[in-house]
Structure formats: C-alpha cells, structure tokens
Image 1 (cartoon, rainbow, N blue to C red):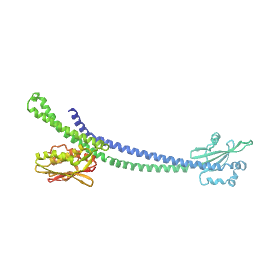
Image 2: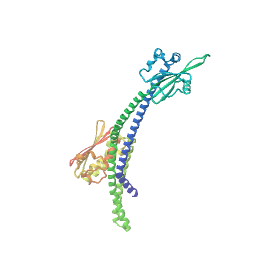
Image 3: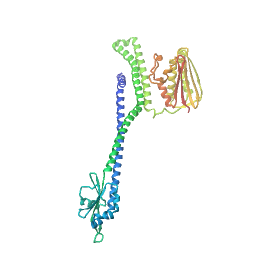
Image 4: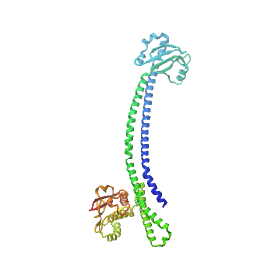
Length: 446
C-alpha cells in the first residue's frame, strides 16, 4: 500500500514539476547550440586571419630576400665607386620602385656606406645577430615598428683555399603599412561578418531548438496526461481498498460477521483492478523503452485457430448479454509473431465491441486476405464514436464522454495498437454515432 501511495505521489510530482524541467532543458540546449556554433565560427575566423596574416608576411620575407640577394654584387661597386654609380650600374632598383622599400650597404665593421630608397629602420646593424643567423644559412630578419628588414653578409674568396673573406653587409627593408592596412580591413570584415553570423546563428538556434523539441513537447504533454490519468485510475481502487480495510480494522469483531465478506470482496475487486492496470502500464512502458530493439517471439500463427479460441469464450458473453455474435473466418491464413500477444490484441477489440453494444445488437468477426495481408474485422452496432474523437481512440486512458460511464481503464486500444505495430501491422477504425464501430487489423501474411 505504501508503495502504491508513493507511486501516486511520484506521478503528481512529475505532472507538476516536469514543466519547469522541460523549460530549463530547452534553455540549456539553446545555449549549448549557440555556444558551439559561435565557438566554431570564432575558431574558423581566427584560423582564417592567422593563415592570411602569415601568408602576407611570408610574401614580404620572400620579396626582401630576393631584393637583398639581387643587391649582393653591388657592394663592390659601392665600396669602389660610391653612391653616384647606383643609377648607372644597379638595374635591381626596379625591384622596389613600386613599394616603400630601401637598401643599405654596410662595411665589414658595420659602418653605413650608402643607402637608397625609403622606409629605413632606425636601429643600427647588429653584427652579432646577423652573423649568427647567416651561419645557419638564412638571412637575418628584423621587425621595427612598421619596417621589416632582411640582412645578409657578403663574402669573397679568401687568400687561402676553401676560405671566405667577409666584404660587408646589405640590408633590405620594406614598410609593412600596406600589410597592416589589409589585415585591419580583414579584421573589420571578420568582425562585421561574425556579428551578422552570430545574429543569424542565434535566430537559427531558437528555430532549431523549437523544431528539435517538438517531439519532446508532444511526449511531455502525453506524460502530463498519462500522469494525471494514472493518478486518477489508481485513486479509485485505492480508495475502495482503503475504505474497506479501515472499516474492518475499526471493528475487528466484524470479521466474524457476514457483512465482512462483502468488504473483503470490495478489497479483492480493487486489488484485481489495480493489478490489471499495473500490468497494462508495465507492458506499455516496456514497449515504449525497448520496442525498437525487442521484437515479439517469432512463431507461425494460424489466425483462424487463434480467433476460434476467442469465439468460444465470447459466445458465452453474447448469450448472457443477448447480443448476436457472427463469425466469417477464412482458413489457412498464417502470420508470424507472438500468439499470446495477438490473442490479447483481438480479445481487447472484441471485448470493447461487447462493452459498447446494447442488448439486441450485433457483432461480426471476420477474417480474410487482401493484398498479402490478413485483415481481421470486428464490427458492432453499438453506440459508436463521434468523428471528432476518432483521432484520439488509441491514446492511453482516453475515453469519450459518451462512454465514460462504462467500466474500463482506457488502455485496451493503446495496447492493441502497440501489439499490431510490433507485428508490422496497423489498426484502423471507422465509426458513426448510434450506428456502430468497425475496427480492422492488418497483419502481413507469413
């Protein structure tokens, strides 16, 4: 009893608190999606900027290296004839005519001999740094404010064999103003483009989160209805059991009286009703969780034999309720599946037909093959279902207003549909008020 009371409390908590949890989860998903997309965008923009920046700087270093190497033979001219010979003997000047470039010639001791062009660095030549870089086989590059420089040492053959003699140094420089302006424009474009992208990412995050949560929202609404209906359905038999138990316990002497038997029957009826409800809920819960992975037991089922077993039972019900029960079952039709589950499916549908058909009515059970499918039809002349309610008949705990007075838990049709789907089939329903209802079960033939 305590366990059942705990179950009722849990269902009420789910019904009241799941809304807050759902809203919180949706916000977290929205924030997570937005942060992931913004991070990907930020990393991509940063990688693009770094790649472009390095590419421009590498092109600058290549130009400086080409310029300074082309000017190497001119060191002898500068040392022997002076700067006046530059215009006559140095065709390499065309290399920096279109850019803010410059060349500087230094002696062995690092003293400036001459210079040409513009954009000169202010720092003097550092021989130790140049020598260490050149010994490694590379020009010595240096950055000063907006000036990039490349320096090489110029050698000539020495007096001894296999020796080189230092003649001096040449430094080529170029302004990085254009590169920095280009990178600033790129950075501005990335910020503007990134801001626009962030805006659209935010909008798309909201839209995609809403779309992603549509099925969850539907499941959440079903969960709310399920919790409310389950609480209601469990409350009825629990009240019966509790009331009868309290009456017996309040006066133990009643146990020896004939009226005690009536109270015990009430307790037994409530317990059986709760047992059926919990079995149905357990069945539906299992199919909800693992139906994609677990299939019914595979066996060859002869539908005519299975239905005949049900007919024997319901013939007695028909005689008791004064209802005409007719059958038209084709022989030899086979399906693959679980016999006990299929029996439960058809039993639920036939039981519904008897439940909502009045005295003097008629119920027809038929079986035939159509397009490689076995079609089982259960038609009655009962109270019928309004057309506006037909989309809801397979929902759990659903019962139309006109049938609420009938005994039942509202799970039979939901279980029947689940079993049919597990066997690769489906159930359809047609109905008209005060005329009758017809359920048809379609199952693939074996």
